[in-house]
Image 1: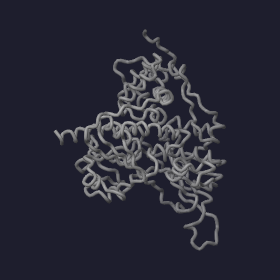
Image 2: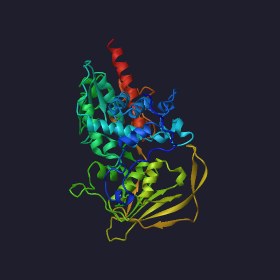
Image 3: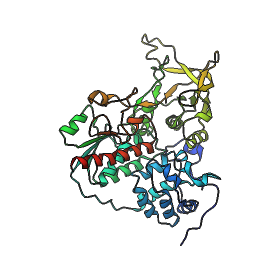
Image 4: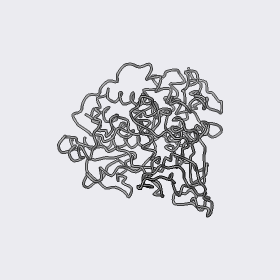
Length: 475
């Protein structure tokens, strides 16, 4: 029976916690669609013949087909369609920037709002996880071994795709818990860690082995994985976890953190809980320097930790914020204060008798200068230019630097012949192949900090390339 289209120009709203309640807890902000909402939203899809939404998805999910299943009430069928392309649907449905990808190409978006593709993907994945207790069937082994360095979205995707082809896959993770940036970077209120663990467990059910506390480049080298442990190929998906700083006076004071450290303490080490053994800075006035998704995560986390005033300090304007629109809106609703068109120039410390200060003093303020937008720079965005004589002081006792990250240089130093770029990004071709035969790379380790779905796309591409490489060697 044909599905009757829903021609409402607007998406079904996403239920969520009240802003003044959620900014005091770490429970998930958005609550997800009910079955009724999901079916109604799915009926907004026109099932276009040319499927423009698919072209906007880095992993090419069969979007109209899975949405059609939702409209028919066949949620498990929808999940199976998504699973043909994606190993992490519950994650992607929550954190992917759909507005600039699949939904950005949606035909319904021309004269109204696009179909809520991400919300439907989340609904389908959550429905499957709560209703399906049958473990996925293990593929027939093909007798070949592949090592994955890093268990973030690129590594998990590559591992999942290879496992489905029958490969004996082992993931080597530096931290004590698998998930990479999904567990140490993205807060619980945006991505519950039980969701990530469920996705990891699904991969383990396919036969993927996960070795934690394994710093490749220190415990074992890439060469040892290949030569001594018999892995026929290696995929490097080690991410970009090395934070950048401004190198301004006072940046080494106590109370100044990288967003990586601040979020890792909260997300991975659960420092926000009363029973946590990992301390975290509970400040009254917090400034987060930066305007991306990580900055929003850090600011909203600080608010939940009890800060009275949390500021986003960004050198461009609101229109230029690189964070997702939804994340900016959620931050504003939760009381985060945006101080745009200004930039820090110095962090100040309290007077002290300690002869080692100011190196080990405690931050009590931040001097900023106001900015204006000049001519476009190399990125195409208008360059922020300081306004002489416009300096002002901010009364803050915690500063979180969210200025981007670079790959850790350890692998470069311990892997002869591995070519990298200026900031340490591994050089890989369109298939993920690095300068070393049999060694592939993808995700943030190659691109620098980017999105979860782009990392997944790189992992998917590398898996196909690794399969082709190994099969050709053994033909």
